[in-house]
Amino acid sequence: MAEDLSFRRKPLTPEQRQARDAVRRVEAEKAMRDHEQAQKAFYANKERLREERLAREAREAAEPKT
Image (cartoon, helix red, strand yellow):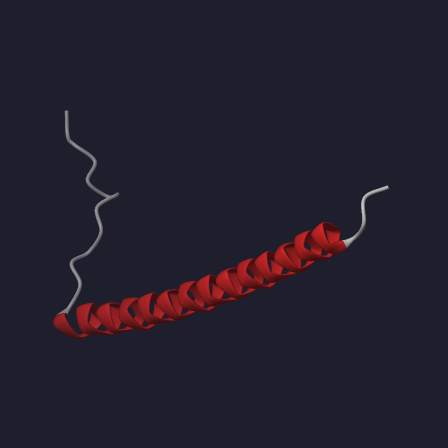
């Protein structure tokens, strides 16, 4: 029985490998920037909500109880 090896990929040339690596590097840098931007937005929103909660709690504590 002959083995079918047609599914194997052709080896990349050094130029193709360099191009693939450059694309991967650019994509990785973009993913890192996107992640960092999302983290900054998350923590800014978290801080805003914290400040709103503290202000609400201070207001409620200052109101006379009836």
